[in-house]
Length: 323
Image (cartoon, rainbow, N blue to C red):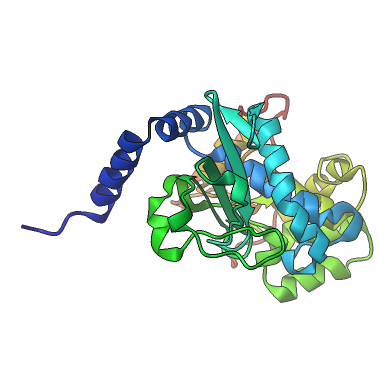
């Protein structure tokens, strides 16, 4: 007999877990109904990390620069922000009630590092992990059993899940893409050039100039601008969108018309709260690649050897895409 496909084996295992624990199955089904592709969960985790970094005030973009007390507070913020996003009812003994079932929420920035309190024994836990360096996150459900836990040696007598029993977790989403923290992952030379600029506007211009064809989140813009009117610094009428047109650079936002242009140019389409910059040139016979009709003419992504020309005006931004 041929070895069972890994994905098929995982699906069989998940079906067994749901069949053995109807309450776990009910919570699993409800969470998937609320967030079929995990995009809402991912957005909450991205926003929570950015909330802790507080880049608009501090200029921070790296988890390692957080104070110990801030890192300790991360789990509470994840718990609160998930409840706000999904309007979970308060639990009777645990954090939430989902489908009428008590569920505790535990977050760790280190995979497997969830700290389980003794009072969670016998209950369901929503185990959440996000790593800004790997740009990945996971969320799964586990019925807490004493024999699956390591012996606790901290003051709160909190326990961790034994590595050999993590296969008991019923994953909702596992090692999914966390929206990328552009400042954390960009080339150090480019990042230094961004922060060396003399003003918030100049820093944003340098960001969109140096970090092209990749998604840039709104909180990255806030961190770079460090101004309360940071969105004004992106738009036309003096913002980066008009400042960089002379360099042939488009800055697309989370509008349907902009997303469609990005798809036609074959660059990442900005999602909710994101921007994507790209240098373009007019599409002529020698340009057989992807192209888009913008402001009455055909445009394509510019190559290094293409001359710099004024970028076209992007269409009206009155219609936003649905989340």
